[in-house]
Length: 162
Image (tube, rainbow, N blue to C red; front, side):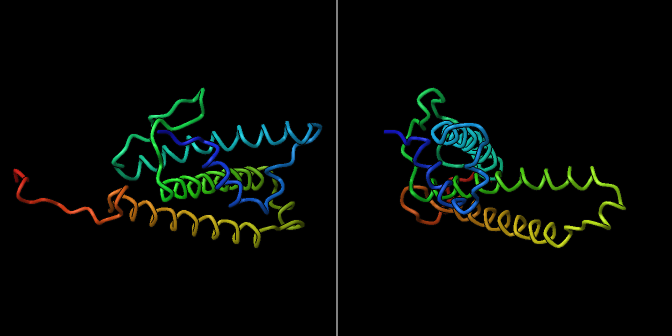
């Protein structure tokens, strides 16, 4: 019982397939470019797992994986696969936000007057804000149900000491 990282990275690739820049690398073959994209996606997967476990307490240990075999040591549900791939997409766009900030810092005010991509920056940051809000809602929903049955978790007050 395990889930390969490839299952999740493929879902991630489908979410960003229109972004050709992710898959384009200069002076490398197509197979090398795909290997680089796969390596980067795996790094996003690790960050996505960190984000998920920072925001909720899953019923399973998402850090139970084998980096060498590139697989989780348990079966992820389809919902978990989708959630992690969505979080990977967020990590990916978060990196672009850092680039936008660095770009803005590198330019002088007179440069910004001649070339002002502020509309694009606003659109991008609004999109990223929406992605983060959507993912937070997904995490909240995921945390409130049993991972296998999908039934709402209930608090058993009878077992509570308080």
